[in-house]
Amino acid sequence: MASQELLTAAALQLRAKALEAYAIIKDTLHSPAEEGDVNKIAQEALKVAQYEGAMLTLQGYESELLSKTPPPPDEAPPDLHVPYSPVMDLTDEQLATINPPVDEADEDRQSGGAGIRISEEELINKSPTYKKSLEEAKLKGLNKKKSED
Image 1 (tube, helix red, strand yellow):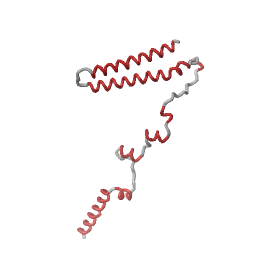
Image 2: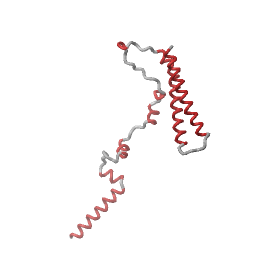
Image 3: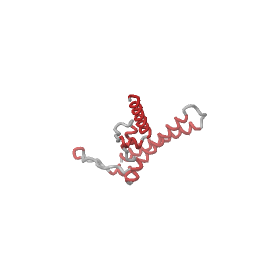
Image 4: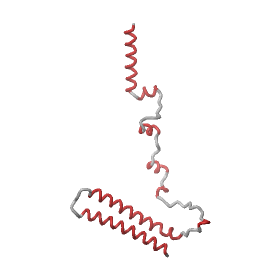
């Protein structure tokens, strides 16, 4: 029964901290506005979310946590249990939208272009600036030859 009391105490502590953060938000909203109030409210809202989430997590896993009794230390097998997460239900397509595959060309562009190698022909086709610079260089070369003759 001590295990149940420990979980209840932990859940109550989390609830108390969530209520404290909520009260701070409420007090801040009902007092005259001061510099930093927005930041304070945002920080306290994050605390409320974290404490409530932790409390709900404990409550959700309560039966599982209480049903397991750890084996003696010398006979303990490695625990291979992975807690359930909603991410486990996602399809490959849904996962791809969360973490899209990395395009190597995009990665190279973000890193300053290091590692990208394209042919001169491809560069001429894709870059009007490069094409123009080649034409200007060709004209300069022809002008040099004419002046030498």
